[in-house]
Length: 79
Image (cartoon, rainbow, N blue to C red):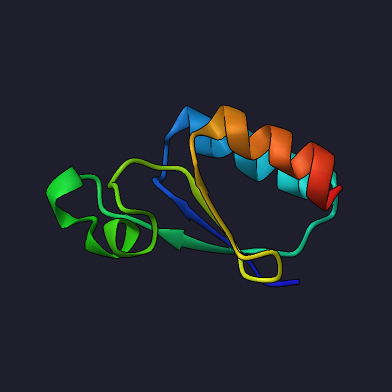
């Protein structure tokens, strides 16, 4: 499985996604992003926007922003 999570240290929404992935024993890589939106070019390149969290699931061809949507995806698809 190839899961990547773009996250910001200290972001409560990102922490919820981290917790869900860990609770389900899902292997993933975290890419920590810059605090300034203007410097989040990698996030923009993969998702079209600069907000985090963003989950990328290469196995299913999914790139998803918004923690609520990501949490549902983790529960329904990855768990």
